[in-house]
Image 1 (cartoon, rainbow, N blue to C red):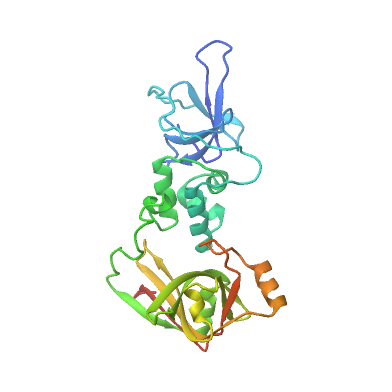
Image 2 (image 1 turned 45 degrees about the horizontal axis):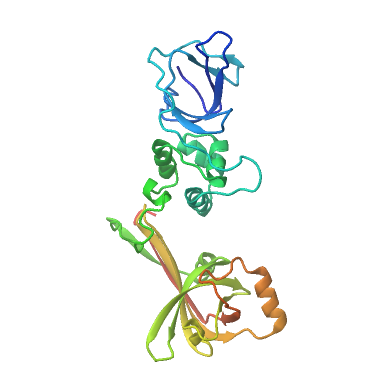
Amino acid sequence: MRAHLGDQLVIESPMTDGAKRDGEIIGLHHEDGTPPYDVRWSDTDEVTLVFPGPDAHIRHLEHGQPGTTHETQPYTGDAEPAPAAGSPTGTPNPGDMGRRVGVERRRQGLTLEETARRARMSPHYLAYLEERPADPTMAALIRLADALGTTATALLGGGMDLPPGQGHALLQPQLRDLDPDECRTLLSTHGVGRVAVSASDGRPAVVPVNYEVVDEAIVFRTAPDSVAAAAVEREVAFEVDHVDEALSQGWSVLAVGPASVVTEPDAVRRLTRHAHTTPWAGGEREMWVSIRPTSLTGRRITPAAQ
């Protein structure tokens, strides 16, 4: 028995005139299309790992005819049930794993189709994983992690309470300085960065903040009595970085410049209206602080061959 993504697996009822069960094959575990398969059943929308038995056959969608080769091994049932929580229609409500998959895929500039091809699964199923709470089989998760250049543990949220960069260093790393244009590109439009300030007691402090980049200025919201507010009317340092744990490489950008409070009402309204997110720390944080970089530098670590 051999199948392709998108084919239907049909299970015949052992009873005369009994109901059949069928589902779409959305995941292959072997490149030659042999069992087992990840199947999304049409009657329940659940995804399960299936080892087809002699009562099963494949309906190849491109031909519209069932396959003629049947397995002789007994049908073992739905070995690894993966209930798909939530309705298949309506507003997407991804689970934590689906969010991580979507973020990593978009960060690498991969389409659904390309990622699904690399992971040997249906693009429809990958879209389902990103949009709905789901529990894929470990084999499917490992293939997906490999397609994204990460690990199944990372997609499941393992190591969330550990600092990044605990992997092994590259054998032949290359440390390269970034020019200002590259730094601006890496800053992008928004994200989470760290502002270095002298706190009210005179001691140095580094505070993470949600930031936006508007008209080449780095802006963030805070409270007037917060540590980050100590940046106002001083020259400060602001840093962003990214570490790729799977590939042991990454980059960092450092911006240095004077910070000031945004007081013009129209400017405040515009910043608030177009902000990509509210401060993760919560609470009343309505004071916008703007940093105008006078220096923008960065470094990137990659394998020596890149």
